[in-house]
Length: 494
Image (cartoon, rainbow, N blue to C red; front, side, top):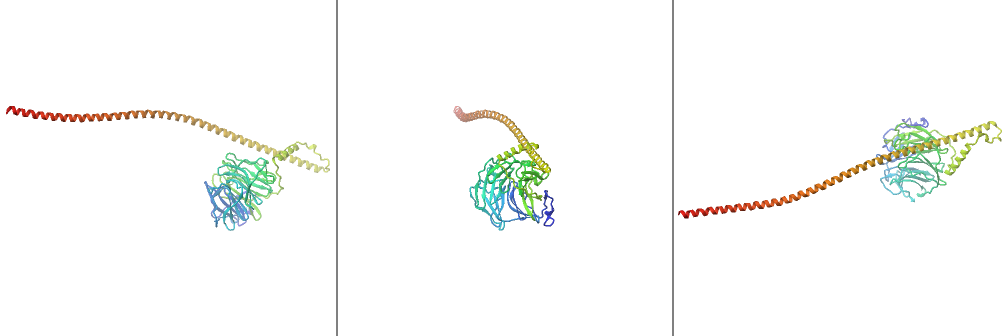
């Protein structure tokens, strides 16, 4: 979509993603970057592309639909991926992430939006271990960090809190069952009290569960979602507007998630707002989604991601305004179970046993009973959806188990074949060693024969020498004999 003046966004259809036609140069495609919108501008920093970490700072103006690059006046921002960026007091704060700048603990950096100066903020307290793929959520004047993966690929599910007033880290002990260790999940704050964690992955499992931490009691719970099913995913992005949490993209290393979800945090109901087809940039892992306020109206802005290729497109959605509901008090697992039991028992109550005798208005009775019946039907429908979700999860687990069994059988078969091949090679090696030993023995015998031949050759040479000397002696004797016989003849004849 091209820009029609400075107010192009006012003509957008509700709850539909629209690609923006950008004028001028565009930044390099990437994923696992950090993104924040400030004053109608989308800031993109860092990320990864083809295994290389990035450190550039790109700014997209949502009014003019143009990109620009920021050059720092001082300081160096290391190339980083899988980090978090938070706006705090006219500064961007950067936390954690993977980079070549190795550190044992989480480093906090800043960029001043006025002076464009960059530096490291010294923090105190119990610094959390360095990591990437974590979530960082702003809660008042505190940052809450959950999960991630450390430099040694160890998965984490700890909670660390950074007090931005004192720049002091602290660890939090929680109650009830914590979420399984994970990274590349999303997190959101609801009603200034509840931290919501959705999805993510381990090294072998992709999650679709929702966990809630009550920040007053520090107690975890895992409430059941209603409405549309949430498929397992990691590398998705999320942003909240009022009571609604908008969740975009993600994937499971096989395919991207095409649906854009809206999770109503008061009702805990999930609905699909939009869906894309094929390898769309919105069905990517490691993309970002931010909320931008344009002329007092909120818009969703998505950028980047990876779905077989790296993306650098900008997409915008105009979410339809929704009614604001009173925050729901999320219960602990025990309280939730008790409430479910009460609802189940209430659902079994027969309508004719309800005491409506004190009401004189018959029409009010009918409306009241209808409301109760509708409520019961809604509860039954919700239970049915939960049952379907559990059956689907169970089927997925069984399918994964079957797949693992097949892989184990394949590995065992391969191992057996390799063992047989190894035994065959070992037999051949023994045979070759025996042959080598025989050859070495033959060589030793030949060497002895050569040595004896040398001694024979020497004897032959000596004999030849003796023969030569004997022949010379015989020639001398013969010569002397001839001379003697000549003199005797002369004496006889003279």
